[in-house]
Amino acid sequence: MKQKLPLSLVASFFLATTTYANYQISPITITGASKTEQTINNVTSNVEVITKEEIEERNFTTVSEALTSVSGISFTSNGSVGNTTSIFLRGMSSNRILVLVDGIRYQDPSNTSGASFENLMASDIERIEVIKGAYSGIYGSDASAGVINIITKNAKEGLNASINAEAGSYLTKKYGMTLSNKEEKYDFKISANRFLTKGFSSQIEEKKSEKDFERDGYQNTTVNLKTNYYLTSDDRVGFIYNYINSNVEYDDFNAPNAIQRAKSRTNLYSVFYTKKYKNHDIKVKYDLSKFKKSNLDATFGVNGYTGKTKILELTDTIFYNKKDFIIAGLSKEEYKVDYSQVSGSSNQDKNTNKAIFFSNTNSFDKLLLNQTLRRDSYSNFDDEVTGKVGFRYDFMEKLSLSSNYGTAYNAPNIIKILNPWGISNPNLKPEKSKGYDVTLNYKNLSLTYFNNKVEDLISWESNQYVNTSGVSRFKGIEAKYTNEIFQDTLLSLNYTHLSAKNENKEPLARRPKRQLGFSLDYYGFTKLHLNLNGSYVGTRYDKVNNSGEQTGRYTLFNSVINYELDKKTKIYLKLENLTDKFYQTIDGYATAGRSIYAGLKVDF
Image 1 (spheres, rainbow, N blue to C red):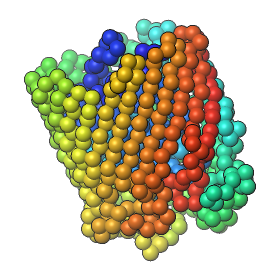
Image 2 (tube, rainbow, N blue to C red):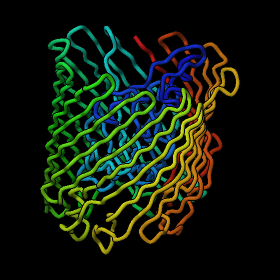
Image 3 (cartoon, rainbow, N blue to C red):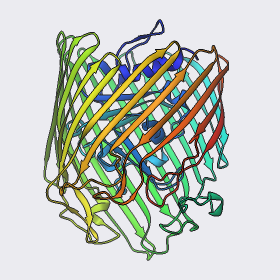
Image 4 (cartoon, rainbow, N blue to C red):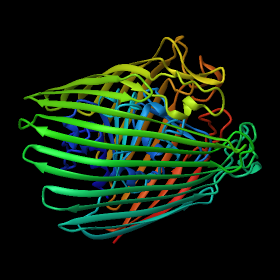
């Protein structure tokens, strides 16, 4: 254990092959930057990776919890685990962030808020890639702020199994298993994980005890299946399946003892074929994403939603020099929404899209260049053409400069156009954005300046969704630093300074102006790893133009203790909110107090 986490953390921050504590690690491989595998030091984009080692050593419960370790990311939540969670990337909200699970869209066309982060557990994850900046040039809609690509674990050589269990505060239990087998011609992996908590009331009046209010519980079952069959050494067929089943209790606003229940079911499928032929890597895949949500206690309005996404895609990666390649692709997409109301009425709609895209990468002695271009043809919007250009220049081994400029768009999903809560707006148009970033890497330090602007921003006005005139601007600075400050002691820091303003130059709601994260790890003991981590959230207001309640200006401290009983068995203790700080990410909604969890992981 003494050697494990430093390697992963240094890999995540240095983003290149690095020697640490006299051990050599390999470059991190990512797929989200171009839809093909690349080492992270061979992309121009600003990318941060949360590795499986970091996830397992920090014992993260949810993906949103893991994402808080990334610079430029903040979050808000409507209460305890399982309640609506919103992620902001460089100040841009969840519905402007494309989320992929094993390359499959996790974007629900029946959800106005983008991906449902609250239902993404951190179990069975190989890595989380956070690719920042306008990325419609590769992925089309929903990638104005960037892409979060979640990759689950693959099968290991031979027959392998593992189990895990955890219990702790708020009557929380977590348990799961993984089974995998990898042979010459085939491999498979299946995992199943269950999370249950009685939780705490989603709403608690300030300074009052949570014991004075009812609990809002949450249950989550997540299953992942991955299998491949190798027809030849150059031909492969594969299948991926992700299943998420969740049930949550929540409170109506200003009703902390209300009893409301909702359930959701998510099914993500992907079947694919890959072929290596001369200098071509060809891939054909069909993805299907199905989402179903029910508000079990609704007495008026909408009580059920169904969203479905189908994507058929062909890509060809063509290597025309030793380090140069072009990716060409075609895709056909369909998005469909159904909803029903308590009154018995229902409605549905769908739209389609056809796309063609290209990405070209050239590598010279010290210079890396990348260009992307994509054209989308929707059935109910005008055609969109987007792209990105980027470069990276290595002045010397530990000094580099990179920059990217991209354009993007965010098509309104069908549910916003139909708007069952108010007035429909068939004239709603896609948002358009453009932005750039500049990054300087020197040894253990990385500094980034970013600047993005959005036109035709979609907002809620007069009981309907409309495009607002003017330009909304998101700009700021990100800083990352990691280093062995003493023997066996690793310090990691990240800092974000953000300015997010609407078309009237008013600060947008729920975005902290400043944010600092830290992690301190000690590996001086043979089998024991100690971690202290935390975050400072600066000034943040609950409403636009610095109005409403101030919900920032607090510091949280957490700790993790890991102990290896043997090479295959680990026990751990996780302590959260050590100082029992009262804070809220959204005015009126509760957060966890001091909490303690104990867990066990065993490999067979």
